[in-house]
Image (cartoon, rainbow, N blue to C red):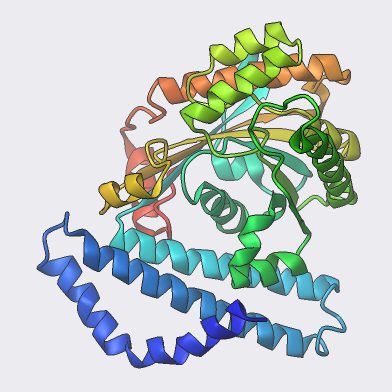
Amino acid sequence: MVIAPLVVIAAPLLIGLMPLLLLVIIIVASFIPRRFRWPRALLIALVYLLWDALLLLVLFALWIATGFGWKIRSSWSIRAHYAVAALALRVLFWVCRGVLRVRVLTEGAQQTDDSTTAASFRQMLRPGTPVIVASRHAGPGDSFVLMHALLNHVKRMPRVVVKDTLQWDPAIDVLLNRLPSRFISPTGFTPPTGGSARSVQRPANAHVAEKAITELVDGLGTADAFVIFPEGGNFTPSRRITRIDRLRESGKEALALRAEALQHVLAPQPRGLYAAIEAAPLADVVFIAHSGLDDLSSVRDLWRALPMEKRITLHAWRVPRADVPVARDDQMVWLYDWFTRIDGWIDRGSHPAPKSGPQAAQEQEQTAQSDDAAQE
């Protein structure tokens, strides 16, 4: 009631400043040294505020079009909101390409038993079978990157469980509350202490999260994708140590040893994935790793990285449902095995070897024409 109207009121002011904004873009792109941070930071802040305000106005128009919210949950309304989300992310990443020089590349592999078959990201995630997407979580905006890839690369409609703190962004708050999604309170990373409020709160929050996941996965369609981040939060070295300590304090020494071997990802928290797998018996599981945002864990890191000039690589492995263990103990080992593989992929540098020949030339042309320089 306060933040959203303020954002919308600011929009006309920004529209009036568009000529000056375009001038700033030209100056930044042509004359100011590439490492000059302030114009880029200011430009991104202004563009994001304008993006948020315009998105709110479009969502308001959709609310009117649905009979002032009467049909806001109808199937055509949900499809329309997914289309708006896809377009909004496409525009946002177009700006990031031009101002921050961020490129998003995709690659994939099909996993069957002990064998791995090469497959393109689009081919592997194309609609036809419901999928559960279990993604690594590290770096600012990685969830935006993943949603952009699912909506615009493979035309999937993602269902996602996200932290309730994202509701401070009014456009995200309105949009996700109209789509199949759930906001939950984070369970935290502090080791539980005897009798503390946090030690009581964490199981309660975990139960709420599992219930939200079960409700969200119910009825998962062939063009849908349920998205979950098993780590429960962005990777930081301190969180990694805390997660290992929590495993030890709970008597899970074997898992703590496995978690110590993980250098780039947190030890996964499996209960959410358990709930999703149980609620969607026909869904394949897709694991997604990414690199390029690993060194950006704080505002200071972001500032030092400007202009980013980042190449973000998403790598996906698809596991057919028949290869997903049934027993929860087996699923635990299986999940740690996959996060060990993700950790190894990150450690090896993540970037695919350069291709050559006619296929490579064709892909390079597609990359140049793509809205986000996606490389199959």
